[in-house]
Amino acid sequence: MGTITALRLNARKKQVNVFVDGLFAFTVSDELAITNRLVVGRDLSLDQIEELKEANLFQKCMDAAVRYLSYRPRSEREVRQRLRRRGFEGPVVDEVVLKLKERRLIDDAAFCEFWRNNRLSFNPRSAKLVKLELRKKGVSAETANRAVENMDDENSAYEAGLKKAHRLSATDYDSFRGSLYGYLRRRGFDYGSVKRAVERLWQEKKGGFL
Image 1 (tube, helix red, strand yellow):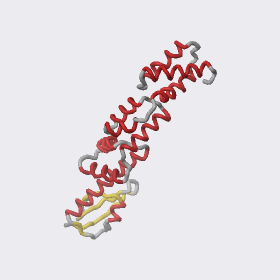
Image 2 (tube, rainbow, N blue to C red):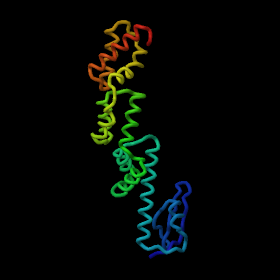
Image 3 (cartoon, helix red, strand yellow):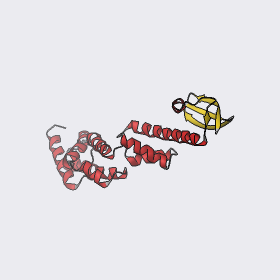
Image 4 (cartoon, rainbow, N blue to C red):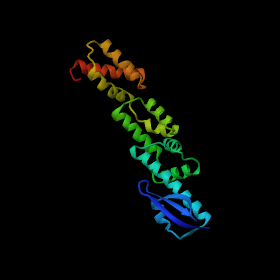
């Protein structure tokens, strides 16, 4: 048992340093200090002090995860890796991830949908390559398969080649094909999809549509 003898607020960090029996004991967020009614003169048991430390660690870990998720959706593995890099580990990471999954802030199926749609809209790639990217993000094979099962590689290859075809000055088919072929193959498209996309784009270029 000890008695709170001083509370020192760090306004910039929104933290309160708690002193027990004249010595620094622990730090909590200002929110936790208010919620738990920490005031000078209050007695705290060792168990209560440990509970406050654990609650503060959980809140710091949760805040770090939420900030990371605020930029764009993330897979569960990405969040876990981020938290480990920030110095969090063990049960607190598991607890935070579980809470975020309950709140649907971590949802690998929704993350896959976001990733697929982002690729289709801004940087088209083959279903095979998108699936590989998702697997590298830690998504299960089953979830990744469901995300890409309705992708149309032939149309995606066309969309991927469209912007590049606009910029090509090639006036013969062989030069045009040579410029697009490797570009589309590097995006994971198979020979058939590339061939059909290039032929379609060539016809549009010849017709003055590009």
